[in-house]
Image (cartoon, rainbow, N blue to C red):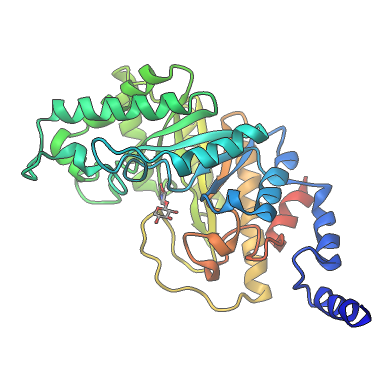
Length: 359
Ligand code: XIL
């Protein structure tokens, strides 16, 4: 017995005991505070989840404690949920939705139309040729109706179209398969189908590199054009895949002040802050950092502080800020990009304290 006690004390000193004293004390530091309480008067604070997160008790606790909005990281994407014409895979999406229902957490839906992880079968016939675009629209409409109806009670906002604008070049639109078949009309159709499926959901156009002056103009012009034609785009989703150097406050402010008069809602939908210079939403990052130094950790905290200060300035327009993943250990960027507020052991990082202490 004495041996066991000694062993437990050693573990707890080295902070490796899952629910040891050391962690319990650390936890209590942030029990009193939370992200959702800190920003309660400003906006919801969300997190994107994979199904493993809601199977793990410690992660469930962290979600409940810190967040009041949830997005599925992958399992509601067309390819995941509707991989072929007669195949629906609801199980994992239901698991996350049920966790949210049981805990009274609202959800953002992600996403209905995207060139990646899309149900490409909607675009082609059995010979692999493009279908007539009316056939595609009928399939898309059915998809949107079924998915939105199933989660109507728990999802308050949807990313209807994701990443349809280009990063550069003469065409402001991304020349995806969707664009090749339909031009920009697929954007209008998707929003119309979504409005019909759930008139109460807030409908978003969502994109990355949204603070880049050229890309933000592309996004602005498209949303302006669509809205002037009566397309029901209620909001702009700023993905927020940033790094410790950028965007600067000026760049973020410029993007927010461009979008704010255009739409009723802005959501920051996929926030993370890499410790290298990479940015954006495409899978280009290759180099993971090494162990994080104190000075980089400090830059990371400072960048989060600047970002949230600017988000709060636009609190009348921004109603949700969502982190892309729960902790560094499950980040899509890899744990060694250190992009989030909680480390791989679920412990709050300096950036977390910078945010909750600032209030
Ligand atoms: C990412 C997921 O996090 C990864 O697990 C997946 O392999 C690829 O997609 N922009 C988006 C998100 O809108 O859906 C992406 O999520 C990240 C970039």
